Image (cartoon, rainbow, N blue to C red; front, top):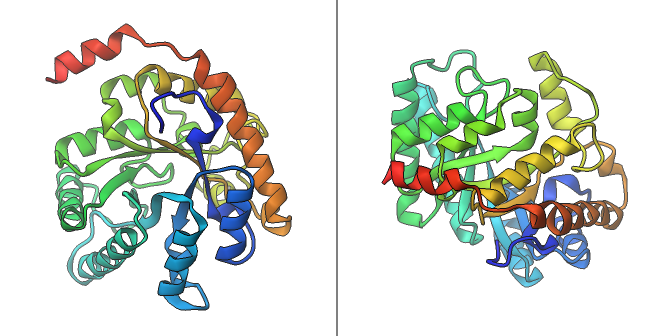
Length: 300
């Protein structure tokens, strides 16, 4: 994010919200005025012209790639499953580097047979970060609200702190933060520099008590902040991050089956309205908090 902070162009858009080809998606995002894009591996691997043509499309768009997703269920596995996930991770890291994305998002494991041993999870994340290090890629570990062990961002903060790798941090997904009912004051236990990415969305029900409801809503019925029932909580998250000194990237991570039936240009304009609200109204009300300095001193 730019040093000025509090401008709508500090936000980027995820291709997952849009229908059509990669060319159609990046054009809609660019024409809406966005300068940044969040890519999925399927944007490259699923391109009819192949990965090389997809890379040319992204680079010619003029959009800055803010991140790349998604590595799922990496940690806590053994034997052939672990080896398989290592191969997948290497492939995603390579694509991430090729497209110029600084960050690869890795979501916490929800596999029923993954280990619940936190030290094992720490060791696996340390290994993942080491795999990414030679490529200049950072790994943003994101809590999934239906995961076995790391189901909220405070748990992700703890795991990442234990792993202690220079290119390992956390991604905060507002959907999972809201669904898991995590307390935002737990952000006090991390530094702004350890947050590599913030992904924003809302939803239209008061609560999502079951994993099945969370999974279904997360995949099919997220909405842009300002369109759902939790807009004030999303605004509070953004305001708190701005106050603590976070100057990293914000992306709209909005998976919605209805949006995929709409004109991508119209969906991108909805995202722009959201960005204007958060950037021009919410972030500009953020002021420095005294505890941020105290935390830095305590962690030194």
